[in-house]
Image 1 (cartoon, rainbow, N blue to C red):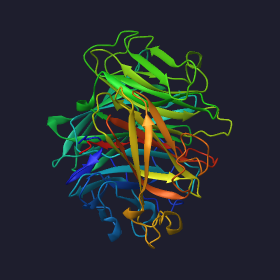
Image 2 (cartoon, one colour):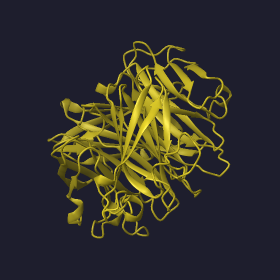
Image 3 (cartoon, rainbow, N blue to C red):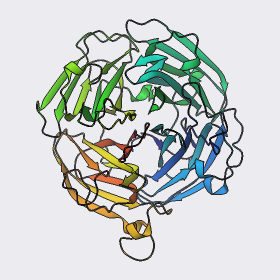
Length: 514
């Protein structure tokens, strides 16, 4: 089983930044200098075990180490059906949980995956999402960080959130490395972080860095202790891109971008940021990104390289927005990245820029390391054209070189989020696992990708539409590949045009097919 963002028995959910701002007009510790927003969260748990239910407990800690006061009893435990059963816990609807920020520790008797959504509720929207971790590690890499950096989407600032995943207090260092041609290196030391507690390192108030700084970070727990790390990348008044940092054990010379967009008609592009982690710089031209179309665009293939050397722990971005002259208009594909002999980490940033509708949404997720062998993929939260505008788009990449057939299992939410009128498929008066909708025969070519677009209503004439799934459906998705490994991600979006940033994305969970 992959260890990608799973949670197992008595393992900390890495930097699950649980915010609860119950009264938005009252300032709380949720507000940070990197953003003027008051942020709240929800998280979704999904059972990854094929045969057994998952039951467990949830512990909440404030960032000062104290137990979180007022958490309702119903939010302290969970029980999930096997093989994709899920539950969503919304902190902002807890009537007694006190405002604050901190972390969560989940103990489960079987493997579960967790995703977190961060939201600015009752304000101009700001949203981000990320996945939890299976276990802590000693060293993490953050490919992109900024302090008061001028960008095309406004001033950018980073928050690096570090959680102690060890049983003892830990001292952590954060090495900040500027991009090539910039100045400003600094090492931050965080002393005696208590077990389970998260530390919020806000670069916007780090006076040891200059303004207009952009670079990367290396986060290290001293004495071999264990931590986890998540990054919030804010731009302008509303934009948030959230992503997991990369543990040293997950690095490699080859990475996969499931779906790459270059300046679509709606303004959407993807920016690929790659961090060079190792003992030597990457020479100019030695980092290669090869892309092939998934929509029949011309040209059918694209090739890019880094124009200048990438220093050790430095980063480079393949950017259709900032380097528009290098990239085609209205192009969609999937990409492979490699630099022979190097250790890399890569994130995918999805951004609307110059959108005709005025959409400024942005999101981020971790690229897929090449060489995966898992044939089952889980998406904890899927929604099809909900009345409030929420809907998801799932991107699936075939990691093998031969075509494979997919079987999709849509498992309805059983906590009332999937309405009886829509989701009681077998008409027995209850919504449960027996109402799972199966879609078979979806073919994906070798080394290619496809989308299942739940923003498209039933009856839409598109190869990406999921017309067997009724509108107003919500639940989880399990995808099984007949004979090739798969991986991917999900976009959590709002199909109605609204102000602010209501765009989120995160990686999928995967496991072996028994």
